[in-house]
Length: 304
Ligand code: RIB
Ligand code: CA
Image (cartoon, rainbow, N blue to C red; front, side, top):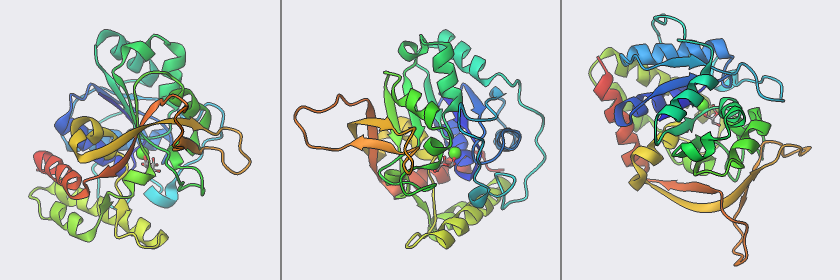
């Protein structure tokens, strides 16, 4: 898989799970939670922490059409606030994330693209290389849902670049979506964070600090949440640990011109016999304890 991300606390955890449980062919970055320089710097810091030398390529610094908008209110100014982090070992290997995605998918069979931020890079790759739609194994994304977080209707990744998201949902190949309906069920509760903090090694302590920061934001902003919704690892684990999730096929489209609903994923859940052909496997449930154990074990594997 190639993880296309905007680290981001939960992106960082997704990278760790992907490095532990998948053949991680490379990491590409996109502007989203923070500007592209920050998300790329953070991706390098995480890869350094786990001792990974997989290719890292910087991608789009702004959406296709929408203005650049970020989420410092969740992830902090740096995009990864809340822990003492080492300086990155160096810059990305290139600023050609889209080329890297295209070349890798053309020369390697069975690649899953796993975007966990705005879908700008993925849309640009599909537009520049339409053959990818039939070459890749599929796209497993974190985004969307039957409710939003950046607005009542729109989840941040889709909202940040709705035109790109519309292109991805229309691309025609295998598509898995982990939206807020499932990710809000995977919360970094105090008990779960304590399991991370109990692990040996400095990295585990850093991840526990990052979880604490992330969870404080969520608990302070939401009714009845006991921890941060660990969104992005779900897009990885539906591929590496599918037995932990429940999904159903639906027709999903993205609103790009709604006065109030731009960035909304419209999931057709009508019980019609004559229904729109499904284009997306929508994930609805997760075995949260088991999924968080995968996260803890992945951190343990790299912590030193
Ligand atoms: O809405 C949650 C998504 O937006 C996650 O991917 C988080 O990292 C942010 O990018
Ligand atoms: Ca993200």
